[in-house]
Length: 114
Length: 114
Image 1: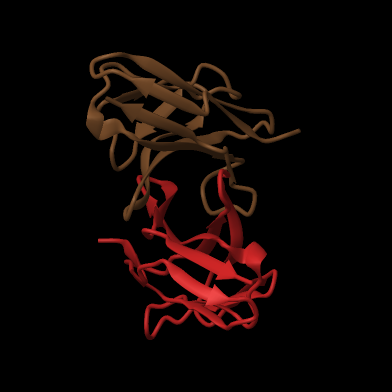
Image 2 (image 1 turned 90 degrees about the vertical axis):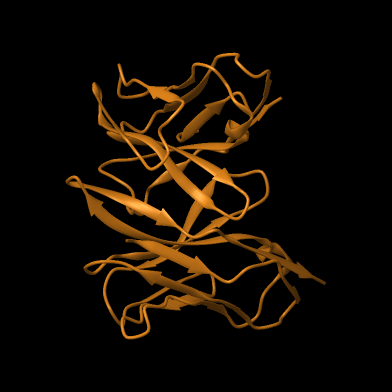
């Protein structure tokens, strides 16, 4: 099925460990983004990309790295996990940007840092 | 700055009750306004949107009217069902650095019981 696929669905990390959250879409969308969802705070934009090779920071980029080598994939890297990064992470994509009717979200990755 | 404020939840209703979830915003210019819904274990889905003042967005029995004079976009439904139980997010789109971004409210959890 076409859509946004996020892996893993759940992850527990120890403080200081690194990991990569994967996001892939098969809709040929140019725009991809990462959000974190925390209780009482809604979704906050971490990083976004408007096409392969182009990325930029959102509201809360510290502690996260991204790259966009292909149109399909937009991985999010945590280089040294901290408890403050415990959250649910969502990837989203669309043809040109957020606010489109077809702005599609993945089902999320729940990350716990202990 | 740009922000969205939603009524705190949870909102608990009986089936067939009338629903209102309040949303107010602060923004420069004339943003588009959105309601997204998140069902348990899933990503966000666009529920409805309005792109200019006095527009009414509607979908699946839900409605919201873009009120510029009160900077509001309240979500309403005349008769809720158990299947409407979810978290509802109000959002606005802004243009920054030449690209659109979505600003989300904190979300309101709705629980409908039979």
